[in-house]
Image 1 (cartoon, rainbow, N blue to C red):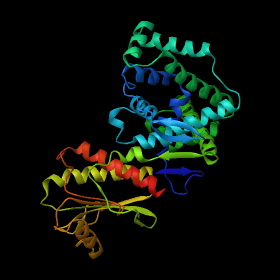
Image 2: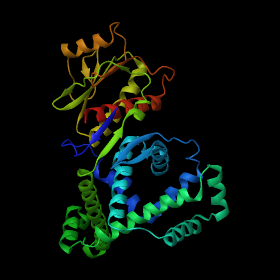
Image 3: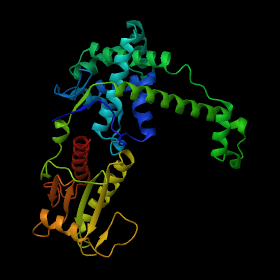
Length: 367
């Protein structure tokens, strides 16, 4: 199933601002991001060709291979719990495609000489020799032109952004003073003049990030973007598709987990699900959840202690788990499961990957 996006949803679906700037914007305009490109080749992220298309941007395809290597190189393992592959596609790769298309349309392009200079600069900073780089690429089954094309795209975007978006952005003294007062730096015995250069730099980076994001959103609003979610669904192995209708409460998808205080294996899974849900709620306002402890009647996601499970919630539990087994899950009334992840009992990372695949699929289907 493909989901076409001609206009942005009115619901907040984007990553928190700092994550977007970190993952999508700064990686585009800072030439140091070349290290990401080269690292993808060195670590063999191209060894398994995946040519299937995961998205199109104004008719230009994004392959699964491109998504795999970009995500693997740009997002370190510890941070993948905060940024899923499909969020990275939507908030990093697609914006880069939009910026590159606009840059080319306006006549911006990096020269072959600039590409060569950038690669040479990386080699000097990394201590690699051209022969070592060629060998690493050969082992990955790729050619020099593949890397050069990626570097060319990054440099073209950088030239476009620096020429058309950033020049008019300035930071006034009043803005620096307001930031200084708002952060109580005076209480830390740091004078305004001492803190001025750092605050000015921080404020400028934030304003530049906002300007780039505003331009990306403008391009996105007039773009024809199609995301093929079938690839994300490949990660759903244990949840059963209970139906096509996604249930929502006040416009938000409802996620439920049912457990009991006597279920030892459920406690850590419930905690991991609660943390995952919290991160998604920061990124997307259209998710709410409940983790019902059936024997105590408490919803573990609320601060107050409930004194009983509502009859409507018990009815849902009995429908998905007629034998009253826990843990039991109902995500959006569409995906259900009873029991732990088969073959991965106690593997919290495997559980989280499965939960993430279901959540990503629900969000795309619902959006």
